[in-house]
Length: 358
Ligand SMILES: [Zn+2]
Image (cartoon, rainbow, N blue to C red; front, side, top):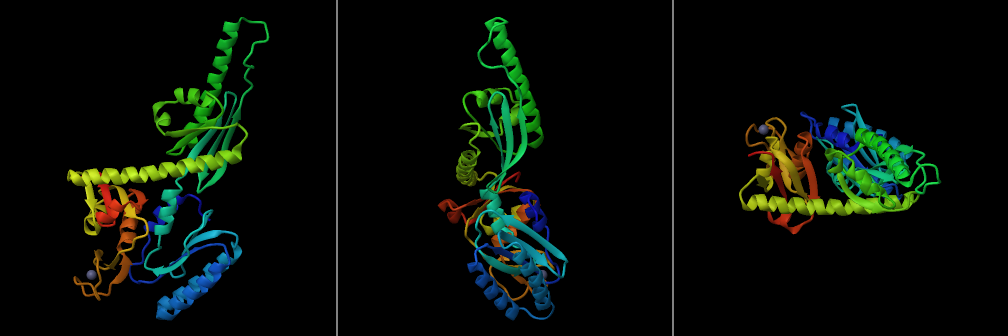
């Protein structure tokens, strides 16, 4: 099973079937038993609607998927599979997902992209002056990456050297320890870092970090050095608040760019064009919105609305959700993605983008 969500989404966004419409099966499934009925119902409906090779592929793909589901009944799952293309990828998700079974010419990545947006991974450093643990927090769970500790002389001198000398030595030892922590952090730090621990140590530590690391620190948590359970809870709460702020901020920025006719695209047509040109720096999508459209794989044309065949080449088209299509383009070009339910995104046409250039 995959655990690097960024990479997985990127890979999935590259995949589509040029010749056939309905060859990739995507399943989002919760572990609770209720979803078994849902799966059966969706499978029956799809089987009835598909014909020939597509039906055969679907049936065989479903056999593989159901075997996998059986083996992983304790997990919430996202599965992307196609027997025809000998393709199978799955992700285990710690949070509940909205169940869906989709048959299409490409994997349906939107729910996964949204989870990635809402549960962005970050690095958590728990430290005091002689002890540090570095965790990576991904999809809401904590994984310890590194643990460091050092014997540092006690705060109070026990005789021998002078008080001033003692303090100097102690300071030097703490500094040396922090340098070790910094070195470890340098190797594994995510884009965002949360510093946690009791007292002043975390502030001192930040003070000695080089700029490129200090800039990634998004917040501090004041907490006991051994309270890891509470630490996870607080840090996740903190990061999800930050995420919400980030998405509000992105909407505000988009609005500003639009008002001054700056580096922005908005509405389906405009945004689609920009994302195809690789201009998009940050894509903003309305959370639960879908917009009906079509794609001609032959001409590589994507448009909003509905037609019976391609007006350019006359070949059959596939019906799509235009927003999903734009999202896939954006993932392929490494754009940042934010989901939002701010009313402003509705007003500007459900989707928009801040551009790298114009
Ligand atoms: Zn065409």
